[in-house]
Image (cartoon, rainbow, N blue to C red; front, top):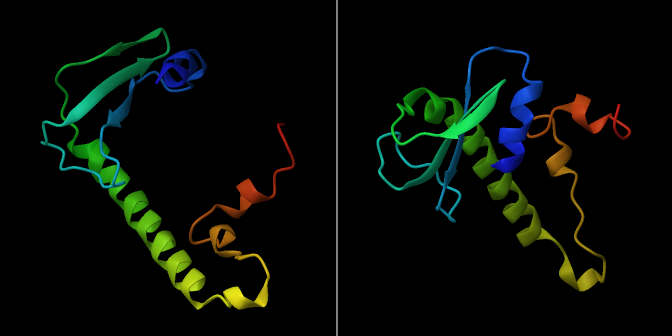
Amino acid sequence: MLMFAAAGGFKSASAEDTVLFWAETGANLWPADADGWLAVLSVGRHGARFVDAMDLTDAVAGLRPVENRFFELVERLAEEEESWDWDSGQDFRTETPRDPAFTDPSVLGRQGPR
């Protein structure tokens, strides 16, 4: 969260952004009205602050497609791993994480920092 707070000075938009951190190790997003959130950080150009109350409906709704895509990736990788011939002596390899369904091809084409 410190990294996101420090990045606020580089924002191009003037509106504040929301950074969420929650203690859910199962990789599942909770409903927006859940009371188990650990921290909500509001980050603007001139600083960041923790907030004790915020309507997270839009933030969680915006993250749902990413959550769904993540679980699709995990399921696909599990199927590939289960069908892998482990007796061949070869290491398990897959190109699935590079599939445009899961990763923007423009990100994969970058060769280091620009």
